[in-house]
Length: 240
Image (cartoon, rainbow, N blue to C red; front, side, top):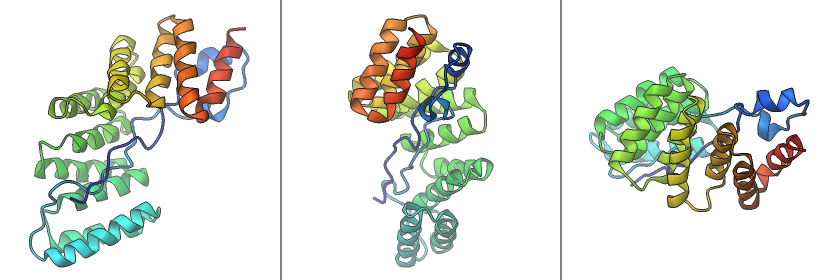
């Protein structure tokens, strides 16, 4: 299996809290000022049972080179290699998913969407593909579509914690805080040390008026990952 593991490319960074903090005259650090993203997938470029056909030996060569360039951050080079892999094996699932991921990294979301859709056509029961597709839908502003795709991923793989995290992010930006809260809670049941899910949980608690609970969740995210320290401190200062 050439499988790129599904994991967030960017943590939840709440613009949703931003307006309230600005009203309090606070200077926002980058951790709070960063954009609220969909779950950006570092994306499972290598997937189970890639559909090698045609000239599989050369397809594997080009796929491997594409993956290497992808991880080096050379996304145009990765795209070229994935396309060469498809010339040798036109139904190669990992190459379509890789093309979607490389175009995603280049913020070419409309192009990425086409490749992710093709990957889903080839493997309609792969939960990770729906997560990738959902992340891209989120970037295109299609929150309802992203929510539906994350839910489809969860139907296929009920223990895929990062799918619940992505669902929570989409619900949070949709201002559906109750649903977001439940999604983040489920993510934490499956991934107890997932700092972004604690952060997301704290965010929706803040917006539901549960300030003390929000502080506790922010603190937990900071203890797991120090990147959240400034966000935690900024929230504490806003309450003084």
